[in-house]
Length: 81
Image (cartoon, rainbow, N blue to C red; front, side, top):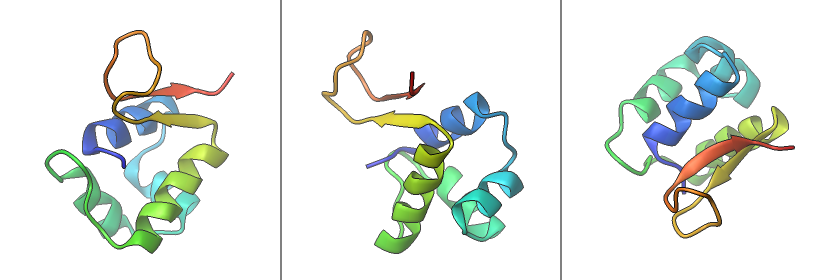
């Protein structure tokens, strides 16, 4: 799944504020704020998480899970090339 840190990093890569991300993902601003305030892995209903991930993917963000191939070895985000 996605962590709050990944969410903030992805949003920063796209130069989006929380309101922009809410609009792009079809979620409310309070939902985005709650997700970003989470500790570690974001908890929420599956529909909201899928909308968030789809919004990032549509904008060109690739989310890296634990153990995925990356130069640093941990979780992360990167722009799709």
